[in-house]
Length: 181
Image (cartoon, rainbow, N blue to C red; front, side):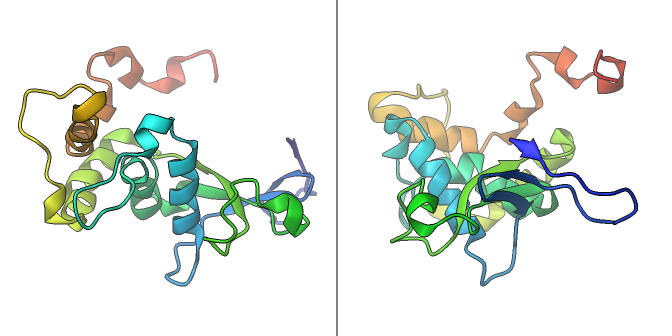
């Protein structure tokens, strides 16, 4: 994907473009379809066995609640959507969801600038916002397969500290010491 250039001093944000698809900031407004679109894209791009896992009532696909929705709700300023509004409508529906989601979002990019801070927000703000019926099954850890797949995913949802890579402490070291300076 080639990035369009801007002249220094214009104050414009550099935007990636490819055949009419533009990368733009996520829109957290209540009347925006961005969160719904991102959830749907996360769901349909997950492996088939994960796509089929629903939360306990009120039922919803679980994958987006693990891997997409926390980012757009907790770190919306570092979330972006691939917007195909500049593409003909026949070519823009790459996710085959235009009949369900009236949006031109065809992909997304998201991150958390600080995983440790994200985990804290996840525990203090995100988890309490979820329905109480989505509690994690008690230990031991359930395998992510067969009849225990949903339970294992719920356990992961309720264990955000696992994102801290405690098994790989070298990933937590100061990134400025790397070759990418």
